[in-house]
Amino acid sequence: MSDTISSPKHTIGSAEELLAYSLALESEAVDRFNDLADQMEIHHNYEVADLFRKLAKIEGIHIDNVSKAAQGKQLPSLMVWEFEWEDGESPEGGSMEEAHYLMQPWHAIEMAMKGEKRAVAFFRHVAETTRDDKILKMALELVEEEEEHVALLQNWQDRYPKPDDNWDDDLDSPTVLE
Amino acid sequence: MMDKPLNIPMQPKDYKSGVKPVWCPGCGDFGVLGSTTKALAGLQIAPENAAIISGIGCSSRMPTYLSTYGFHGVHGRALSVATGLKIARPDLAVIATGGDGDGFSIGGNHFLHTCRRNPDITYIVMDNQVYGMTKGQASPTTETSWQKGKLTPDGTGVNPFQPLVIALASGANFIARCSSSDSNGTARVLMEAIRHPGFSVVQVLSPCVTFRPEQRDWKNTLIPTHKEATSDIAVAARRLMTDRGVHTGILYMGERPAYQPKRGSVIRSIAEIEEEFRV
Image (cartoon, rainbow over all chains, first blue to last red; front, side, top):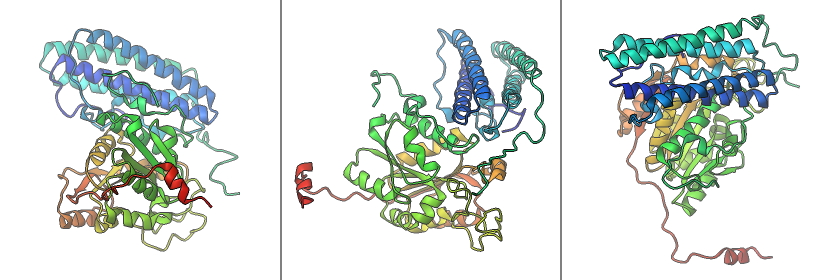
């Protein structure tokens, strides 16, 4: 998954379609962060598990906001693979391969921030390619919202020191044969 | 089994058992689990109408994490159990899952003959080209030059097994390759695999981030196929033998009828069958 490029392969055709994309984007982020929290709990990395759980809750609030905006509107019903994301996966989902059992809060926030930046790129692309004023207005609002999330995460990440290069060294590595 | 109110469509989360996977964080099998739940939801198969059958290995833990019926069985024998179940219960959607070692080495013979027999089951092989659960030995699909296995420090010295070529030659009726990084795309392929009659083989390249960390970059080397799935065996053979294992998508959709023996006219009760085993 690319760090910043994330645009739909086709042009968004209606405000309802944009809301459906927005809802899918936030829902996949909630699922992904909850999955990551579960993984960290199983591997006793509770600090990062809590952080992923918080991130899932925050994305859940975004779902509520989008759901309110969608009230009374008939959104298109799309299967998960019918959303034409640039990379096949929704921008905020985060890359599962980046998870590591020794990862630190800094890494978790970095992962979330990459997702938010991809979401900014996604909505900006929608704004730049639409000729519909309603879609443009909504897309620009979503860009602004996602940029706020990036700034918040940046602020959050600044509270943690950047881990050194050997952060994943394990004295009892699972790869060592006994 | 869960109680689901009528008329509310099943969601992917409804197929999760609630047991948290013990796979290493970053493991590709998480993506495959997500794809499987999305495919089942896409088809709206009720959990009690599906069975996930597995062998042994990291990926064979799959039945534990799903709310369908499940059987975590004997090493390499998932396909034997799955075939038996499908014959006894043709109404169930039967899905076998496992890894490359379980499926192509320990269970290699069963793989060949299940392809030949062509029962209406779907086989998801999470291929990471290594035995992960036993700490990183070369598997049948490991490349010849891999020198990081403790048992094969000079490389395996043998050509890797080509599961999809073998599947085609042996009679599988649906053949696809996917990437666990593309969870949504894999879900679409799995849905087609389950729908398609006969034996469907889906090889999912699923990184082992612990013993093959370089596989994190797999997703950047794979190329989605833009060609239509062919039903022509000769075309499929050429495609599979020349694609260097990097093309993803549905590569073959055959037209062989699925194997299903005629049911005997007399259906015996469990008590009658038990009687045969009385000593």
